[in-house]
Amino acid sequence: MVVPKRHARRAVTRTLLKRQIRAAFAAAAGLPPGLWVVRLRSPFDRQQFPSAASDALRQAAHAELAQLFGRALTPRPARPGAPA
Image 1 (cartoon, rainbow, N blue to C red):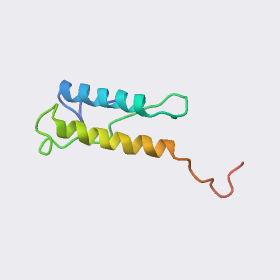
Image 2 (tube, rainbow, N blue to C red):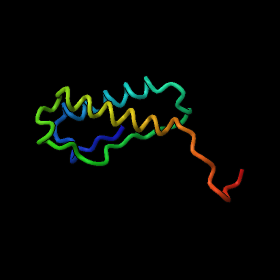
Image 3 (cartoon, rainbow, N blue to C red):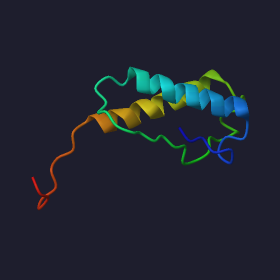
Image 4 (cartoon, rainbow, N blue to C red):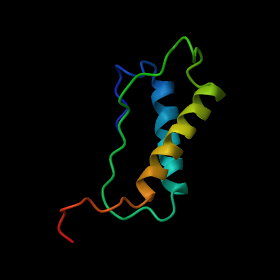
């Protein structure tokens, strides 16, 4: 889990996001074994989430992680010309 300080300034926010990531891994049954990296790529808007540990932030992180893990669990169609 990588939650950079530049995207989540407060430690309580980084901790909340890491807990949400751990919970998403625990709930993602059927995830192929391997090493997985989850990295926060863009900051959460402090105007939209003024409290560092708000329920709104928790729900937004949960929804985004559910979408991410959902994409990881769906099989991709084979690319044309790719070796079988």
